[in-house]
Amino acid sequence: MRRAGILLFAAVPFVVTAVLYAAGSDPSGSSAGKPLSAAQRAREEAKARAESARAADAEVIADAPPGLAAPAKKELAQRIVASAENSTLDWRAAYGYIEDIGDGQGYTAGIIGFCTGTHDLLALVERYTEAHPGNGLAAYLPALREVDGTDSHKGLGPGFTTAWKAEAKLPAFRKAQDDERDRVYFDPAVRLAKLDGLGTLGQFVYYDAMVFHGPGTGPGSFYGLRERALHEADLPSEGGSEKNYLDIFLDVRRKAMKAKKPTIDTSRIDTAQRQFLYDGNLGLDTPLEWRVYGEPYRIP
Image (cartoon, rainbow, N blue to C red; front, side):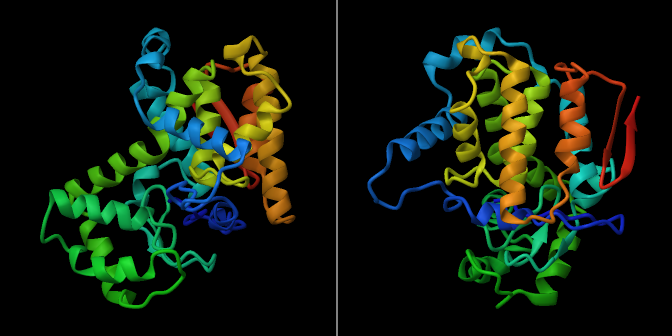
């Protein structure tokens, strides 16, 4: 899963996303055969609902506007996330990015911060190799499986990072990164937000939280944070106020970030998403102006 604030382009504080994700469940969200508590069962059910097409939900999804899934809005979402993750609006500049940022998750790489220590990088390379056997990363699959769940570089090192950068020049691997981002993060976040009765801004709030905290079901992962918000506010789909629910969800997120690392910069919430919310911009309509790590951004 995705876990790391990359911040390639500016000398600002690193956002160590991996740490927060590690506080959640395992990357698959599996309970590994242990009895589930009522809270964990609710989180597992929410994850399953977000990741699978259910007949009971089909009408709700069909009746909902495209929202963040509309091409222009989806592009906007990637740019806003990149302002927090990479300190740039040019999210495509990160396809070839790879380094160990010292967060305990091994190498962080690509457009959404796939990590060798959190399974999502391994899943990406496995799926890419199924479609493109003999690619430049395929030879590293045994090593990637060996280090999965650790911060180890055993069997990887300079050869792997060179291979990643070379492969990232190929359209096929760039598409593979896009597809994995959508499969694991974007599509489930947007789908669940629509089922929860959220508009375009709310869908983005879910997506950014999914990226940062990870799509796991532990208390510190996305589904755990959502459950905590539900204890304090009704969903719009249940008659609650959309603005009130999102305000509380952002509060829960911010507290989780600060609890894990008191010095962490939370401006991706404070002077970006919260600003959009308080401006009443539930449609995430342009022009948009916001600040992350003190840096101003504008999309006309």
